[in-house]
Image (tube, rainbow, N blue to C red; front, side, top):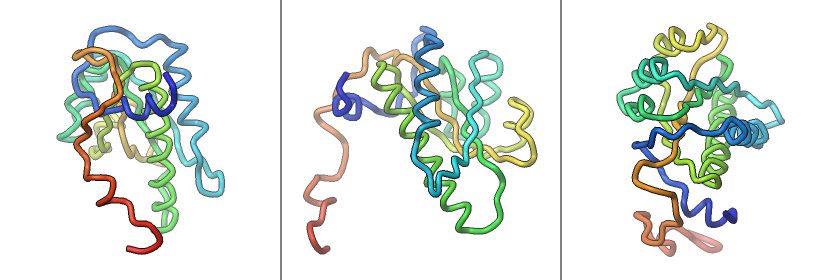
Length: 171
Protein backbone atom coordinates (compact mmCIF):
# COMPACT_ATOMS: atom_id res chain seq x y z
CA UNK A 1 0.00 0.00 0.00
CA UNK A 2 1.27 3.50 -0.72
CA UNK A 3 1.67 5.81 2.28
CA UNK A 4 -1.22 8.06 1.23
CA UNK A 5 -3.51 5.05 0.78
CA UNK A 6 -2.46 3.62 4.17
CA UNK A 7 -3.11 6.97 5.80
CA UNK A 8 -6.55 7.27 4.22
CA UNK A 9 -7.36 3.65 5.15
CA UNK A 10 -6.31 3.99 8.79
CA UNK A 11 -9.28 4.13 11.09
CA UNK A 12 -10.13 3.20 14.65
CA UNK A 13 -11.09 -0.46 14.66
CA UNK A 14 -12.88 -1.94 17.64
CA UNK A 15 -13.87 -5.36 16.31
CA UNK A 16 -11.13 -7.75 15.26
CA UNK A 17 -10.95 -11.13 13.54
CA UNK A 18 -9.24 -14.02 15.30
CA UNK A 19 -6.29 -13.97 12.87
CA UNK A 20 -2.92 -13.56 14.60
CA UNK A 21 -0.52 -10.83 13.54
CA UNK A 22 2.72 -12.30 12.14
CA UNK A 23 5.64 -11.56 14.47
CA UNK A 24 7.68 -9.85 11.75
CA UNK A 25 4.78 -7.46 11.08
CA UNK A 26 4.36 -6.76 14.79
CA UNK A 27 8.10 -6.05 14.97
CA UNK A 28 7.80 -3.58 12.09
CA UNK A 29 4.89 -1.80 13.82
CA UNK A 30 6.96 -1.51 17.00
CA UNK A 31 9.99 -0.31 15.01
CA UNK A 32 7.81 2.50 13.61
CA UNK A 33 7.07 3.61 17.17
CA UNK A 34 10.73 3.39 18.11
CA UNK A 35 11.69 5.55 15.11
CA UNK A 36 9.06 8.24 15.80
CA UNK A 37 10.35 11.77 16.24
CA UNK A 38 10.72 13.12 19.76
CA UNK A 39 11.66 16.44 21.34
CA UNK A 40 15.43 16.62 21.82
CA UNK A 41 15.52 12.95 20.80
CA UNK A 42 14.47 12.00 24.35
CA UNK A 43 12.45 8.98 23.17
CA UNK A 44 10.29 8.94 26.32
CA UNK A 45 8.63 5.64 25.57
CA UNK A 46 8.65 1.97 26.34
CA UNK A 47 6.33 -0.47 24.59
CA UNK A 48 4.90 -3.54 26.26
CA UNK A 49 3.26 -6.00 23.86
CA UNK A 50 0.44 -8.14 25.21
CA UNK A 51 -0.95 -11.06 23.17
CA UNK A 52 -2.29 -13.53 25.74
CA UNK A 53 -6.10 -13.53 25.76
CA UNK A 54 -6.52 -13.48 29.56
CA UNK A 55 -4.08 -10.59 29.88
CA UNK A 56 -5.84 -8.69 27.06
CA UNK A 57 -9.15 -9.12 28.87
CA UNK A 58 -7.63 -7.75 32.08
CA UNK A 59 -5.90 -4.95 30.17
CA UNK A 60 -9.24 -3.87 28.67
CA UNK A 61 -10.15 -2.58 32.13
CA UNK A 62 -7.58 0.25 32.08
CA UNK A 63 -10.27 2.66 30.91
CA UNK A 64 -14.01 2.58 30.30
CA UNK A 65 -13.40 3.05 26.55
CA UNK A 66 -10.88 0.21 26.20
CA UNK A 67 -13.23 -2.78 25.84
CA UNK A 68 -11.92 -3.46 22.32
CA UNK A 69 -8.54 -4.41 23.81
CA UNK A 70 -10.05 -7.72 25.00
CA UNK A 71 -10.83 -8.67 21.38
CA UNK A 72 -7.52 -7.58 19.83
CA UNK A 73 -4.81 -9.87 18.47
CA UNK A 74 -2.20 -7.77 20.28
CA UNK A 75 -2.18 -4.59 22.30
CA UNK A 76 0.76 -2.30 22.84
CA UNK A 77 0.95 -0.46 26.14
CA UNK A 78 2.75 2.82 25.60
CA UNK A 79 4.50 3.79 28.82
CA UNK A 80 6.65 6.75 29.80
CA UNK A 81 8.78 7.71 32.79
CA UNK A 82 7.00 9.61 35.55
CA UNK A 83 8.33 13.16 35.20
CA UNK A 84 8.06 16.34 37.20
CA UNK A 85 7.14 19.57 35.50
CA UNK A 86 4.50 20.56 32.99
CA UNK A 87 7.00 21.08 30.15
CA UNK A 88 8.49 17.60 30.44
CA UNK A 89 5.02 16.03 30.56
CA UNK A 90 3.80 18.09 27.58
CA UNK A 91 6.80 17.08 25.49
CA UNK A 92 6.36 13.44 26.45
CA UNK A 93 2.64 13.46 25.55
CA UNK A 94 3.38 14.99 22.15
CA UNK A 95 6.10 12.42 21.49
CA UNK A 96 3.92 9.52 22.64
CA UNK A 97 1.18 10.70 20.28
CA UNK A 98 3.62 10.65 17.39
CA UNK A 99 4.82 7.15 18.29
CA UNK A 100 1.22 5.95 18.56
CA UNK A 101 0.29 7.38 15.17
CA UNK A 102 3.43 5.96 13.55
CA UNK A 103 2.50 2.49 14.77
CA UNK A 104 -1.13 2.88 13.68
CA UNK A 105 -0.05 3.98 10.20
CA UNK A 106 2.37 1.09 9.69
CA UNK A 107 -0.32 -1.28 10.98
CA UNK A 108 -2.74 0.10 8.38
CA UNK A 109 -0.10 -0.41 5.70
CA UNK A 110 -0.26 -4.12 6.58
CA UNK A 111 -4.07 -4.16 6.62
CA UNK A 112 -4.16 -4.22 10.42
CA UNK A 113 -6.68 -2.08 12.23
CA UNK A 114 -5.88 -0.21 15.41
CA UNK A 115 -7.84 1.37 18.21
CA UNK A 116 -6.22 3.59 20.80
CA UNK A 117 -7.39 4.33 24.33
CA UNK A 118 -6.15 6.05 27.44
CA UNK A 119 -4.39 3.96 30.03
CA UNK A 120 -6.22 5.47 32.99
CA UNK A 121 -6.07 2.79 35.70
CA UNK A 122 -2.40 2.47 36.57
CA UNK A 123 -3.03 -0.25 39.15
CA UNK A 124 -4.54 -2.50 36.45
CA UNK A 125 -1.48 -1.85 34.28
CA UNK A 126 0.87 -2.64 37.12
CA UNK A 127 -0.92 -5.91 37.85
CA UNK A 128 -1.12 -7.03 34.19
CA UNK A 129 2.27 -6.00 32.80
CA UNK A 130 4.38 -5.36 35.89
CA UNK A 131 4.76 -1.64 35.14
CA UNK A 132 7.37 -0.26 37.57
CA UNK A 133 6.56 2.76 39.79
CA UNK A 134 9.10 4.83 37.82
CA UNK A 135 6.77 4.69 34.80
CA UNK A 136 3.14 5.32 33.95
CA UNK A 137 1.04 3.92 31.18
CA UNK A 138 -0.17 6.64 28.83
CA UNK A 139 -2.05 4.80 26.08
CA UNK A 140 -2.92 1.38 24.79
CA UNK A 141 -3.01 0.59 21.07
CA UNK A 142 -5.11 -2.46 20.23
CA UNK A 143 -4.22 -4.18 16.95
CA UNK A 144 -5.85 -6.79 14.78
CA UNK A 145 -7.28 -7.55 11.38
CA UNK A 146 -10.71 -5.88 11.17
CA UNK A 147 -13.61 -8.33 11.47
CA UNK A 148 -15.60 -6.16 9.03
CA UNK A 149 -13.11 -6.90 6.24
CA UNK A 150 -9.93 -5.40 4.84
CA UNK A 151 -8.97 -1.80 5.31
CA UNK A 152 -9.36 0.43 2.27
CA UNK A 153 -9.06 4.17 1.72
CA UNK A 154 -12.09 5.97 3.12
CA UNK A 155 -13.63 8.26 0.54
CA UNK A 156 -16.51 9.74 2.58
CA UNK A 157 -14.73 10.79 5.72
CA UNK A 158 -16.69 11.98 8.75
CA UNK A 159 -14.54 15.06 9.28
CA UNK A 160 -15.01 18.82 9.14
CA UNK A 161 -14.63 20.12 5.58
CA UNK A 162 -11.11 20.97 4.39
CA UNK A 163 -11.95 24.64 3.77
CA UNK A 164 -13.35 24.96 7.29
CA UNK A 165 -10.20 23.55 8.89
CA UNK A 166 -7.41 25.01 6.73
CA UNK A 167 -6.62 28.73 6.97
CA UNK A 168 -4.10 30.25 4.57
CA UNK A 169 -1.88 33.12 5.78
CA UNK A 170 -4.31 34.23 8.51
CA UNK A 171 -7.41 33.05 10.33
